[in-house]
Image 1 (tube, one colour):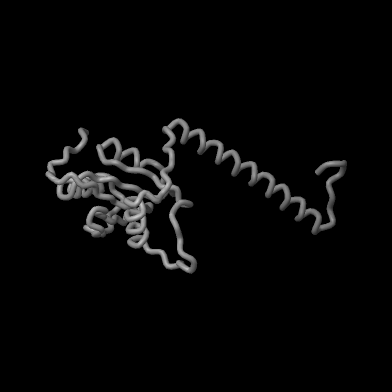
Image 2 (cartoon, helix red, strand yellow; image 1 turned 90 degrees about the horizontal axis):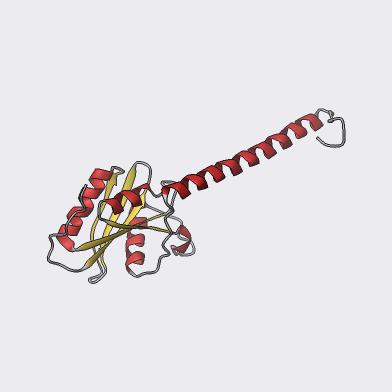
Length: 173
């Protein structure tokens, strides 16, 4: 698929914050030059629909720069949008400021916060690993989880035996 060409005469940059989940994505479109939220909406996590929406925003308002918070959803959305000519970056969750006592989180509010902070340049962008690096990270994470599970299971077996007055013969368990 060829990258989408901006047919708008406007040269302003529009910032889009996305709160990404497994099934849905909340989007907030923000014009930093005017300080106005142009649109807020939720879409299903469907790449063709998201791409079509972002192209429409780009046609109407100017160059789009989008971002979303790093999460268990991974980097697939970022890679797909970049491949379709839409600028997309992944933000480190630790760089998003949280007010003391701010406990109520909504997808819409999170998308708005991402868009405005991204436009102000206040967020830290995550370095996107290539697919091979990501596969190696996943394998190492899986190995670490397995090692923890083995250790925890051994401890549970030893506690079970000890509670029943049984001991393993020899110096080690």
